[in-house]
Structure formats: C-alpha cells, structure tokens
Length: 202
Image (cartoon, rainbow, N blue to C red; front, side, top):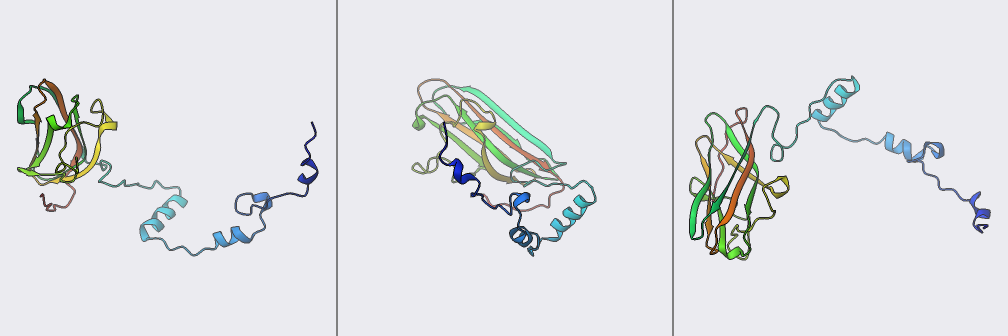
C-alpha cells in the first residue's frame, strides 16, 4: 500500500545541531562548548585528575551512606511480645568511646492490625527522638510497620547522632489482646575521624 506522505519525505528534515553531528551547523554546539561555567576548586581538581587518567575519590553524603573507613552498624531485634506489655525495652545501643555514632535509617515491625494497640518509642538518654515521625494526628505516635519484615524496603531515613556513652533505646507497647511479633532495626556507623559535635534532643 502506497503511503501518501512519501512524496514529502525528501523535503522534510529536522536539523539537530546539538544532538546529531551529521547535521551540526555549528551554532548551538559552539555556544555550549564556549559557555563560561564556574566550577569549584574540588571539581577542577577532579577534572584534572580525570584528564590525566588518575582515580578520583567519590564521597557520598554521610547522612545517606556509610563513609569509607567507618564501621557499619546494623542492629535488629524481634520478639514475641505478650499482650498487656507496656514500654518494654526491645532495643538498646550505647555509643562507643572515642567517636561519633550516627544512625541514618531505622525500621519498625509488627504484625498487628490496629494502630491504637501498639507503640514504638525511641529514646536517647530518656528523651524522645524522631519527634516528627509517626502519626501526625496522634502526637506523632509510631505504631504499625510499613512492611511485612525488616528488610531494606522497610527502612526509614533518619539522622540521629550519639556522643560517646549516649544510649538509644526503643520501648514497645502491645495492648491488642493477643501476643504480637514486634521488632526494631537500626542502621548507621561510627567514625573516629568525625569532629565531635553536640546534638540537641527534644
């Protein structure tokens, strides 16, 4: 079957100077090549190293990834919690001496159905942390889990810094009327190369 548009194809072309080298008229590409873009000294050093074929160190954000040379932390506990349990300690971690400890994500787990029957309470030196994580209509209470387990998909980003000897603990409550599996997982790292800083917990 004959295509009626075939007669027009020879006269129809789209010049793509930036994308197609064969159709490059020189105008757009030259403007991009000659653009004056300021870069930081760190970027200039990385580009120079790359041009010389040298390896370039890449530092990922320390609030999202464990830095090179830091010791990773991945603590998790799951218990069968009897009904009527109120503020039972399921997880405790004390920061070691000589370094700053940072937690960058956490996960909570239970197989309950009704949020009113459960609570996860994170504390650092007896003060609530993650004050805006949870149900905003119920004083930001942490109750039901977001996943059926404590795998990577269940982890929630956070930024908790502990000074040496500070302790983070999780207290759990189950008033559902039945025994329930409940658990906590915390992922982070400690690094003795980080300058000590004070973090306020409220």
